[in-house]
Image (cartoon, rainbow, N blue to C red; front, side, top):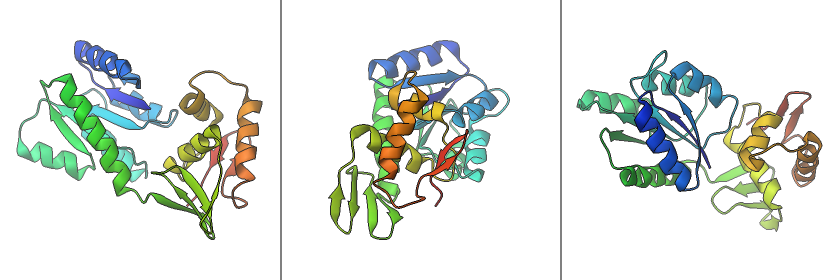
Length: 217
């Protein structure tokens, strides 16, 4: 999984990043809200950790902007604010949780686990991909009229990235980063996507030539 961390306090940013990397997560760090917003459209993130008070675009404004753009990613706010009105504002913006500074990193780990689980349960785990075809996000199973269609590991990962980013164009670079984590030949990605498309109804995964792929729902 890959997280985005928006935090302008250098020492805390580094501590959180190192802690999460030790847990096996990949973490991209930013201290500026506008840069973080731009990154969200270049990379697939599974969770956002947003400090409220940062330059350019604060955490509240960033999440509000993403919601208007129909970009839904589980989010935890990090802040030193203690006023209940600020907490209320955070939840109104659509965050999953709220953690106040200073905090123990183990507490952050627990909140991350809860946020990811809650976000998944709130989403419709059964995704309709065509008449009588469903993909179960929780079980990772594709079925047609109740009969399972076997997906290879990479095919499943590609499908889930596209589903999580429905109505958003996913570039080859985003797929490469989210699934392989390193450079792979574009031809390799195209082969995997073509194999996946053969198992799905026609036009579920649409190709925008030279730009990437998209599932429109």
